[in-house]
Amino acid sequence: MEVRLENVTKRFGRVVALDSVTLTLPRSKFSVLLGPSGSGKTTLLYLIAGIYKPTKGKIFFDDRDVTTLPPNKRNIGLVFQNYALYPHMTVYDNIAFPLKIRKMPKRVIDERVRWVAKLLHIEELLDRYPHQLSGGQQQRVALARALVKQPDVLLLDEPLSNLDALLRLYIRAELKKLQRELEITAIYVTHDQAEAMALADQIVVIHKGRVQQVGTPSEIYYKPRNLFVATFIGNPPANILPAEVGSN
Image 1 (cartoon, rainbow, N blue to C red):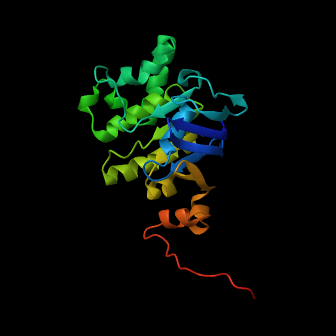
Image 2: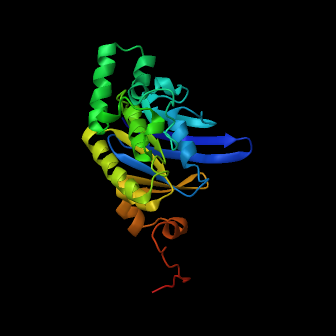
Image 3: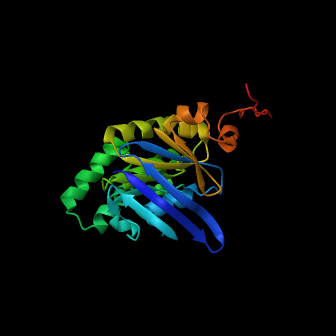
């Protein structure tokens, strides 16, 4: 599923969170929305999800205009930073919940839950409750719940930020492998440039509500389009030297 935004603006009162964004996020690729805090990347993700409605502009899934559709009509999977698991439900019931809402047959629900649990190596956790899980296990359950309905687009809002560094590296590699195996369109929000470089087929650098550059990790790193991208990407950041362009 290709996701396309055409001249999308989002205002909250007088604050312009996104300013005239036109962008294509390709089918079956891992796109990362990268920028500092307050840049507008999460707002962009929530517009794609249907949680927010644009002030102006249009959003398309392939050629289907979804601008005014609610989230439940878009066939998306969404993983939040805090996982948002239901504490009174077992892992099995947490994963099954989106399918129960759709009133799917019990046999289909059971097959789907066990399929995604096997995919994410959490079969032995199905009878546990969220408070009995580690952070990494909770993250996998949240991801399983997003994937179980076989979404057209998988949206991830900084899902690894609450994990310790070593676990973050491990889950990051698994997430990329999973996306490739399922050939799903994934859109991932982060402020961590190392995470973006490791995961992305395409990086969208956002700052002050505007798209600064779109490209592969290599293009973003070696061919920054402007001063912000050049100083934001890289550790340490690029050296900037004052110069004048002279004639030959």
